[in-house]
Length: 198
Image: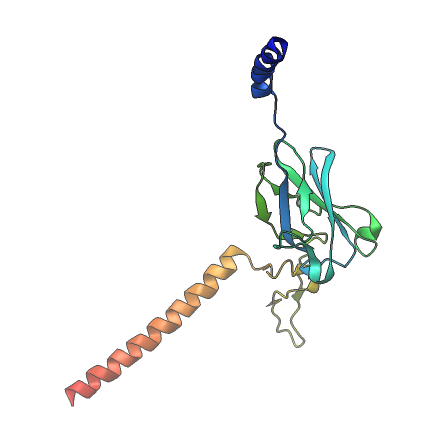
């Protein structure tokens, strides 16, 4: 009996200082590729550096994890530092795993945290159309025309379009709008003054 008490007293400090493993972290949400829901069956993976620390399969509608506690989530057992996501599917990037043109990341592992993270992978570069000008016509008269910027399908990235107009062109267009509004305001004021004078 005395030996049992002594053994217990020796084990209590050892148990107190023993490391307790972290609770896992979990992610849920949707995955899109170039603004389109990721295909069903695609694999979403999460890495800490070059070490894979979790993965989940994309379900219908691009969902890779759910809010409900009994349904699938992307679970990360443990990690330190930045977490980086990737996606792989036969329908994306020729079947090769990709992190996209810009890495989709999460700042750090937090034990026990469940995070709603919608993953937006971009695999196509934004391509601006080449600038072109048209020459003037016959009879000695001629002039250069400016081409209007057009948004090509490749410029549509995650719901936003890029513009190929320069800042100077945008400023000139804004100045023209302001001058037009001021002209209309002056015209209205002149009419009001004329009506008051009658």
